[in-house]
Length: 400
Image 1 (tube, rainbow, N blue to C red):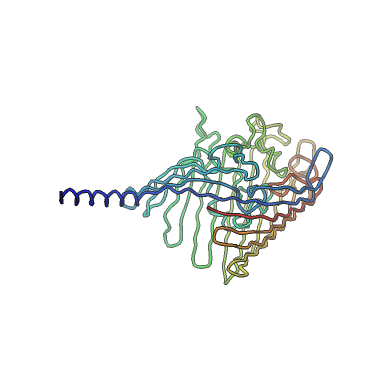
Image 2: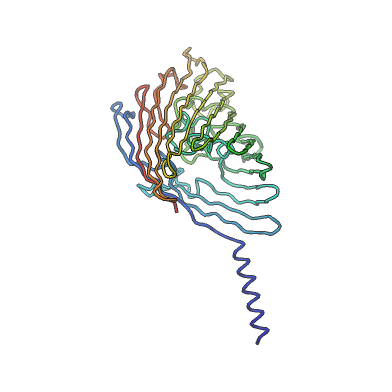
């Protein structure tokens, strides 16, 4: 009897230890706000708008819920997974075009010595490395660069990914990913690859990333659940580049850094975006440019964040996006410029809950990729009918 009790006690201890080594966590957040926009395009012209909008559109964070799991396999190796679903708090509808786990869905192995390998639907490495350094990382979608042209705001997540992120070696880590196109007989069609790195040392962080994708209309933009299945997946993005959907390839080169001193953090982000071999995708819409032409954009952001008190954070950023001149088939020189100013104030009511106010002003000039006069179009909002647009949001966010 005594031996049986001892055996049961040992088995109970082992079972408890095994259970402690594995975990599944349910998590999420809700971000709700009221937004004013001075001018949005309607069938009867430009009109002002006041509306409730989810954080994914006009707040600090998209509302979501998810599960993450970890199983200790021993020797510093762990099996991991993440399933994450976006939703609209004011309608209850699923986000990301209705995909159940449209935000993230992946499984992988993580080693404390070497790093992590995952497979599934994931963020591109530029999002991992540069979003935390940009205004978007604190202030959300409205502050994204024109139409999120460099994807730092994570407009396009990536399907069919194999992704590697190294362990941290003396402040340095590298990360890369490859997305299989999944087209029979053409292993590179619709494919995407990235490589990037980050170095952090005390108050300073610097990062850089390179992304290249074939047939971006089908592969990169087509992975967005809101994309069309029959025409241009660029069409619902931003007129700065929506006319370039016939491109055969796209590349994004981005680099940036943050430096903190006392309660202040300053940052600088630069990205170059190029759409090449226009006309290569006949199914992406009508090519308005000479076949084989290329268009590139340069984007620069400067930002500052200041912690006024432990509970109050203020921030300001300026973003400049410019498209190089490209003549279309009608002889019109395209190449729009967008200047955007962002201001934010966030008050933490607790570790889980905060209230905030955001203000964004954008001015557009030149001729956009569709061959028409450029109009302001703050990311997430319906474009204006004029070169200027203002958006102001007051919101509440809570995490669980």
